[in-house]
Length: 234
Ligand code: DC
Image (cartoon, rainbow, N blue to C red; front, side, top):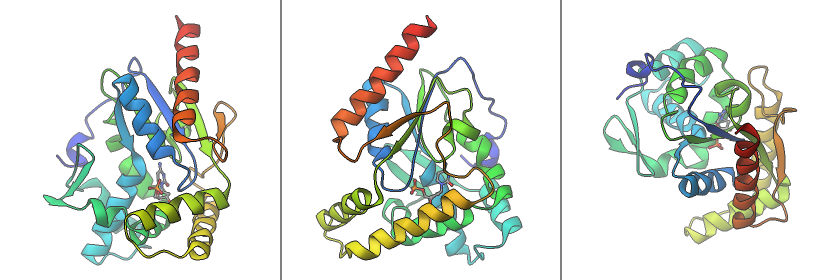
């Protein structure tokens, strides 16, 4: 299935969305996936869409500043998400997509308005019954502004750098803590300063500061907020 073939899908306001936004390495992906599993909802890792687009651009030799070529590429991307695995043009690309190189390239192309526009409907096409948990930077502000619950999940840059460092070491990947901290701060600055869909906490989002919370506690907080919302709405 290609992104362009999905443009005809419409958003479905009756299908609930939980939007979890926040900075890199905040743990929002892990929390979002567990919340989705708990509720039996679908899960959208929107960062992976930006990352796989960046990877496709790097592979095609497209400059990361060429907005028109990138928007066109995004509209024709042959990408499939299947059981936690990511396929690009029929090839499994999960490890490449999760690399720091793809993350940094994703952060650069994510500043381009026409590229973001080209990915909008593809992201919305993940909204299918019985519900969706979506994580990213602009899930609650741009992609699903009518989300039933919006969470801004964050932690201090130091805590996030340590979490990323431990993850890499556990995978046997060489890592340097101060370099990771520096990269994270750079990426935060770029994601927050861009003019289109910047990373920020909006007034209608709950702040979830996880520096002193473990994953289970963060998941429980999101579920409590969601159940409160549903009760209020019924
Ligand atoms: O969540 P992540 O680190 O995998 O995202 C990679 C990059 O993609 C991130 O630096 C900013 C961008 N991104 C975005 O601009 N909007 C989103 N909804 C998700 C990710």
